[in-house]
Amino acid sequence: MWAQVYNPTGSTVLSTLLAALPVVALLGLIAWGKVEAYVAAFIALILALLVAIFIFTMPAGVAIRAAVFGAVTGLFPIGWIILNVIFLYRLTVEKGWFQILQQSIGGITPDRRLQLLLIAFSFGAFFEGASGFGTPVAVTGAILMGLGFSPLAAAGLSLIANTAPVAYGALGTPIQGLATVTGLDPYLLGAMVGRQLPFFSLIVPFWLIWAFAGFRGMIQIWPAILVCGVSFAVPQFVVSNYINPWIVDIAASLVSMACLIGFLKVWQPSELWLSPALRTKDDSALSAPPPPPAIPQATPEQVRMSWIPWAILSVVVIIWGGQWFKNLVNPIFTWNYPVEGLHNMIQKVPPVVAKPASEGAVFAFTYLSFTGTGILIAAIIAGFVMKFTPGQLVRAYGQTLWVVRYSLMTIMAMLAIGTLTRYSGLDATLGLAFAATGVLYPFFGTLLGWLGVALTGSDTASNVLFGGLQKITAEQLGLSPILMGAANSSGGVMGKMIDAQSIVVASTATGWFGHEGTILRFVFWHSIVLACLVGVLVMLQAYVWPFSAMVIH
Image 1 (cartoon, rainbow, N blue to C red):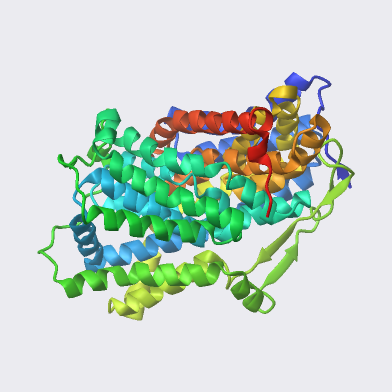
Image 2 (cartoon, one colour):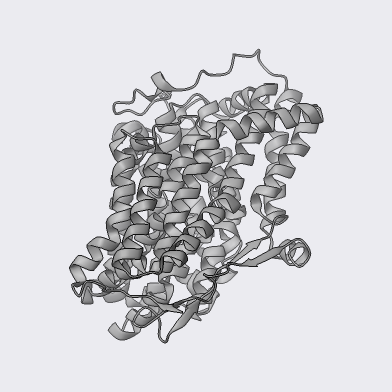
């Protein structure tokens, strides 16, 4: 068994810088924009292997196994979700149903700002709550692109919108993961997150429209933004604090969509915003894929039919996200493979954990309960409803696989990096640097959650990665471990928009391949500023308003 080493050079600063090298290289190469995303990911993976093996003393065979394990988990479940969402989207485009859907949404409101609130924020939050793991960005990015938004607006704004709901994504999976590694009550952790994120459920809709249309464009529709934010934030608080952390996003998103659509029946802005591009310089439409051909005005029956594929998808992902469904099918339709030479061959040691603990490495191939499998089944059902033949579906699937091939390769390489950094202890070295900030720890501990999501692409993975460290450090500093555990998850949601996997999902959903660097540069400072605002809130909860950090359930 190999024990992780957190300061291999004897210098905390140097070890931290070396541990950060792979992720800095990855983000730097993507932002540079001169190399394709999959090339940047493979370069960063090679760099991560070199640092892990030659600096952090990880045995080479173990390091390679960890990277391969990560690549496979990148394909299942994340790549599997993207492939099948894009498959469904392409089917609806081919039959012309997506263009009818576009007309129907335009019938609710032709104003681009209001379409963003409805689709990117409220509708996206529903898919985050039902399935998570890239689904909301894949769905909303594709829909916004079909509605005529520029590729940068569709991709970047989908990423910004998919923040406030993330901590309760996939029916509360991040909260459950945090509770598992900390031993804390998931209801208390979920309630504490519900004392933090509702503030940002109010802020993010305003932020989203400001990023798209500027301050003046935002102020023109402030009543609708307020309705959208309040109708999401209030249920988010109430459900998380007084019911459970599992159904927060689904309840809040349904309330938000209903309130916003109802409000738009009695209120519309005096000046419509019809431009599909960002108010700032946005030339992305010049490199966008060609739009589908225009269609005649649809009948009410055609409009109802156009929503059926997405209704089928919504029902299926709710079923597939339920724990009862997983408990039903996983005992039968699962293949568990302990990775030989990696499983229980690595030991985490203090101060990252309270006592030495071995790291498991079991690939759970739950092939039926994967969200992507549910999406594929929904796409096949929808395909038959749209009167595709089996042969046409097979051909369309092959074409989709070819379209997203580089995206799948990129995601596999990125997950390989994230998994390797976890097993090699590189991420723990970065976490310890944040934990050494003393009285400022509530702020930097929140940013640790942000870093975890930026590294792994998942709030759940970040919670599993740093949850134990947050608890130990909070107890040593006399802070509430529930507060800091929740801060890890709440801070992490703002890292979701810059993690490399999400950016690739966004570029794939919008068909804007090869422009991942442009997307990253657009969302990066939004992510940093919002994460810092979460950190300030947690500082206030820790020292100024400690009563707000007291949760009674």
